[in-house]
Length: 184
Image 1 (cartoon, one colour):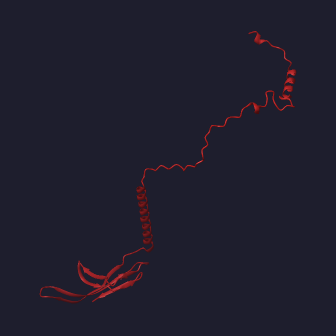
Image 2 (image 1 turned 60 degrees about the horizontal axis):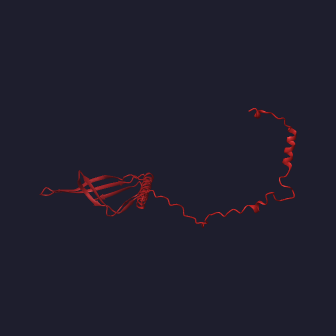
Image 3 (image 1 turned 45 degrees about the vertical axis):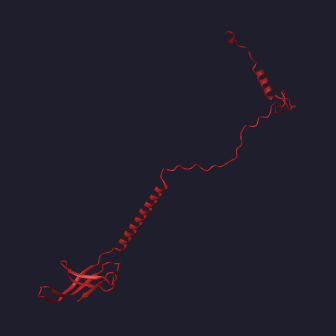
């Protein structure tokens, strides 16, 4: 143990000079291009070729997506239902817009004049009467006209009993107009 603890005097400057000389001195003499052991290219055999098998480059298609479990029929039904719902919504929106634009109102009909022109009773107690009736139809709509076809029928009823029936004439009434029918 005592040998490990000895201290020897060292000349620091001489050691630094020796290190500088070693660092500046070349490892191989300047005239030679080979080391003492010879040319490394001649001494080492070439590395063996890699034992890899070369394969041609083939691009594979992308992997197929997994189906979500729905069949083609299910998709077709879903799309059909979606299209029908969209069409119904479009038709409803169109009808609502037309309703608010035209603001339709029912025409008003009234009996202006009713008179009995003939009245008779038979022996069998059957009453017969002839009426003279004037009916007015008023169209309160601003943008909708009314078309009366030649085959239209009109009737005046009192308590469920027909007082007078007749056929209307073909005519067209514009907006906010009145029409009179008279039967004799």
